[in-house]
View 1 (spheres, rainbow, N blue to C red):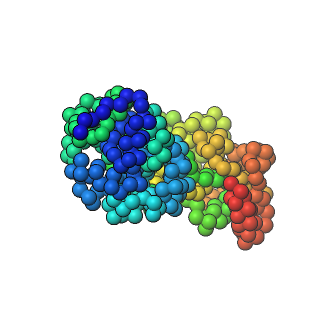
View 2 (cartoon, rainbow, N blue to C red):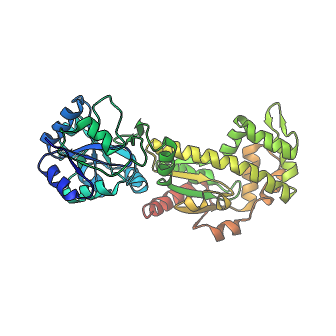
Length: 402
């Protein structure tokens, strides 16, 4: 057999594919051995050419995100988000396969990996052939993946109908494979995309609800309702307290700015509060330090939640509207309450004096600010059971429209 070198005539390559042949194709990662992914006989030729074990499944190259719906079932919203973010590109997404995907591709399993390659000639071939391509790397099993057509020739000259010469591969590293067939999601192969890039993209797909308002307003009750609805709750005040214990870097920055405000039992909040709650400039400096560390920890929590399959989260922060996550929320809801009730709750909850509770409240923005800048307002001016019922009704209605 004479192997044809094709440089631009993908119609000829499409004809070979549709007649059950195998063509080497370029991608941004490595060259691949491509055959009709819906033709079991053609797929078997790939296994034979590579000497690939029959129990190792093949991935399919597809032209766009619509293929997810045709070739996979139970496709989570997060998988679509990753495809829209990284396709065409070096990411293979593993999902439950539809019956249309041959057993030879799945190697007897019930999942299939899909990838949209970032190479114009192979994308053109996919569209002209109109079928997904089973396309593992174009090398004998155990050998190095080829980055040029010349390397493919060295491996398979005379054994392939054709090789599409698309020039050197731009990435030169295999795709990253993520299994999204069940949660938590798993990185099966580390490749051109890092896990942190994938986790960041997934975290952006989470429906994030912002809850804000002054201390003692009743945000905890609203958050409890969201937790019951399946949301991960991120209390930025709790995150800050955790950082006070486990972040030596944040502690060092605060002490450098405000002196030694840490004692044997941790942060001396009253000592620090006596400084910052009377001096707006000092409070601004403290917030600049703490918000930076809190934001980084919140992002870490969101990424972890996303990799575990989470789709809903709520963030509770007094300074939410000024922070890094204000633009990422689906909506922001303010919880407000009469000042006298807030003071009573703070005294009972934290064992502080009424005077100190009033000082803390005075250092924060008033209810008018939150009411003006948030999408919704939840007024907590009744008993806890009534407020909880109001929150349940509100979130069920609003989240149904997000």
